[in-house]
Length: 220
Ligand code: SF4
Image 1 (spheres, rainbow, N blue to C red):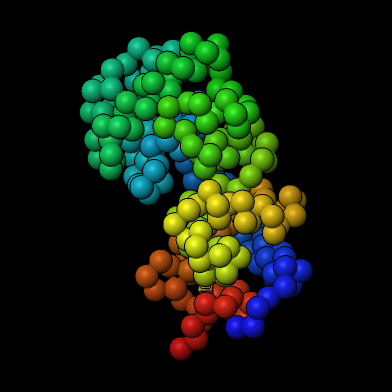
Image 2 (tube, rainbow, N blue to C red):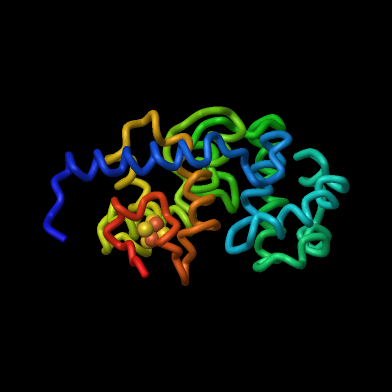
């Protein structure tokens, strides 16, 4: 493929978002997001795990510890028992309790609504903070780049190959190329595409609405 100008790449990236917007429209968060506290804990638990698995354990988790104050007084072992079906459950349980403790001690029991404060919470990185800001508070500061978004960004060559294993750099590439108005829907709509069509192992390019503008498209 000949080298693409930044202007052409930007135009293509916008077209990707427009097409996925037409296909999926606004997509609801897949995790329990009844309030920002439940959301931050659910997203924290979702690392390296499917949302469906997280949604199986959160009803019991939030029945036993519905508020930051309640979870702050739990032990990681108690929380671990409830979430033991999830990968890395021991460290996730520890982070969930410590996160609740910090929300109580430093933020008066309310999940903070800024990127700089959210990323200080144990177990919360920029990806989680982006989701909490976006879904919990309606604030768009970036794009949550999870495994689907990262894979699709690279298959579409909207981020250089050297950033393939660095989602935070991939996010910065997407933020540079996409106008801010598009940031809000990228995470959920690209996850939908990843689950439905742009599978990690077997992308179904023949059914993909982006096939004619995707440099990685493989047609049968
Ligand atoms: S054309 Fe294929 S590789 Fe490209 S986004 Fe669609 S499914 Fe993924």
